[in-house]
Length: 341
Image (cartoon, rainbow, N blue to C red; front, side, top):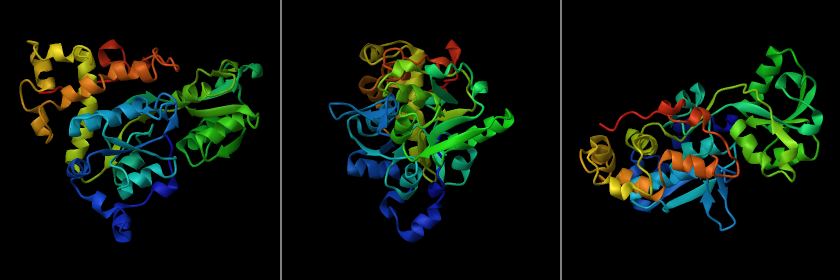
């Protein structure tokens, strides 16, 4: 949900400066195929979303989307070059052509979608801003935070949301700002502030990095809407469609009961919807400029959306976040993919 003034740089300005000239063509797919990998911007240090494991391998729900796009376009989910970006540089890195796509817990907003030369391809995690406090404070609700000192990442919509929330509820507060999430966490852990605020998903991820995670709780209030999703540059509809329908393929696979374990058997199904999804019938892949088995490769190598969610941020992960809004539409959530037809 980070917003940086540094990121508000027009594509025209970038062109004038000659930044990323080769990457700013309107055919990102051709460039990806030529270079042999997808350059994907990620956080790199946020558990559950994108972090580097002890084995040196990137993992997380945002990383899985990068891998899925590589599987769709190159047939190999491993063909990704991850670029770890902080909040201030992530949007500029995409605008300048340093990366092909951004998959870094980034909130879809009107400003970002209209005036920055960027385009959101979907929502892979519905989130909202919350607050984390130490249990010893005895606070049970955000309404009890009058006069609190609050740690957050500077230059963010988090800061704007806090200002709105406290003004609306006629409460006072003191900001303690840092440049990175790690600095925010250290400030909170050292007692520089009473509260740490960020997207709730980040709070769960940051909490497990604390020396004593069980001493802190996430308060129940959610004070904003934070639809997080992949971002591409405007002006390349083909690449936008590829990223969007890569994610839709993962959603559709879950809804259809197609998993990484049974996808081979599903190639023989009589279900016409699954046949179209997997490329047995129709021309879904060709419509995107991809091979007919693009969705098969995604599901086989990465899994469907539910598999990715559970393994990275869900109950099968250290974060143990319930699906909630991120459940499929037919299970009480908001995740819904248009039909492959």
